[in-house]
Amino acid sequence: MLIEALLAVTFASAFAVLLAPEKYAGRLAAALSLLPLVGSLYAYATFDASGNAVLGGTPAFETTAEWIQAGAYTIDWHVGLDGISLPLVLLTTVLTTLAVVAAWGDVSERKSLFYALLLFTEASLLGVFSALDFFVWFVFWEFVLVPMYFLVSVYGGPRRRYAAIKFFVYTNVASLVLFVGLMALVVATPVTSFEFGAIAAAVRAGEVGSAFGLAGSTITAVAFLALFFGFAVKSAFVPFHTWLPDAYTEAPTAVTVLLAGVVTKMGTYSLLRFNVTMFPDLLREWALPLAVVAVVTVLYGSLAALAQRDAKRLVAYTSIPSMGFVLLGLVATTSYGVAGATFQMVSHGLLVSVLFLGVGYVENETGTRMLDKVSGLADRMPVAAAVLVAGAFGYMGLPLMSGFAGEFFVFTGSFAAGYANAPLVTAVAMFGIVVVAGYLLRLLQRVLMGPFEAPESVSAVSRRDLAPAVVLVLLSILLGVAPGTLMGMIQNAAGALVGVLGGGL
Image (cartoon, rainbow, N blue to C red):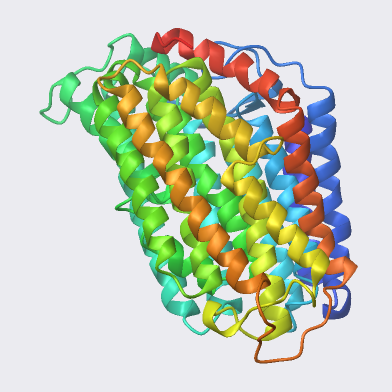
């Protein structure tokens, strides 16, 4: 019942903060956010799952109970954690607590609502990553959209309403398409439940029959593409990425941390659970085209970042190539590729949050984030500058930081992929790292080096404001020095999946 306790505590915390006086909302939210964080750390310390939860493995903290009987179909409350989902649960609880702390100095109005929405988002994300029933998963998936829409539209920048509506429309259309795709699959198979494992077993066994006047093979292919479209929009793969720069730029820093750090991982995590796990044959057929999408995502996102004058928009574009690396690892269908992609999801969540917090320091202290109006800040805010440098170098793949480990695993697995010209495709994607290094060095050189220039006077960033970014840098170093901290459990679940996919290294 640990998962139910985490969900109940987090939802209850959101309502408690909503009803709390404005004066105490921030500190109460920070205190209450520690409860799911401690719970997730306990889950990590006592984790005893084996294999992959969707492929017959034994998930930890599993609960199954009949919930709704609708005609011939049964909807179960089925939740549990395996080596793929627990790292993302940990990422969610860590980033939520740090986002709450980071928001203390930024939010001045409607504080109770703001912090309540952050905690409501956390609870919904925990549901997405622990659900093992499609209906339960979809309910939590949709729950995430609502608080995110209000957080951007109420507390964001000058173009917040445009960004919020664009985010909502894109992700809602994506949700509708993936819902239709999976429902068609369920109707065409003999399964009478919405269990991930039952649907995956039926599809892999070729039990998709004809329906709606379409052959089973056609329904399977359409469902595969519909699900990929839905998850591609959420993950912001090119050309479905256009909501991302606007939402990230207009959202307040704390909300951007959750958006970039965790919400986009809903797409890549679900892509792994559905497309990769349920359709191994189709994934192998589509591996090369999807790898090309990954490479285009890496190169387009990297080059687009080079053209940005707004530091926050530049960092927003850095998320796009990272999601391309994750897709490249997943379609490799190899042990290192799949496990590396999962590890990269966590690493990216930590490091992109450091960069957004660093840009937030610059904006708070100088009153602007335009690169041509700020320079020479290293002497005025040295500790914040050091944190920003550490985050940027981690993002570039500096050894002994998590970014290096994640990219190493992804590229090792991708080189060994079975589709045509896999080494060439991987080498082209690796060129994106050079471009990433270029625009991040440009960001550091322009903002931190040279003669001092800023529209407003600058003082050192307070220890309280620095604390979230310092914690994230330390976690990135921990995962870089000891990747086995997470990699062991990830490989346990990914290994079972690679056995189905037939991949190698």
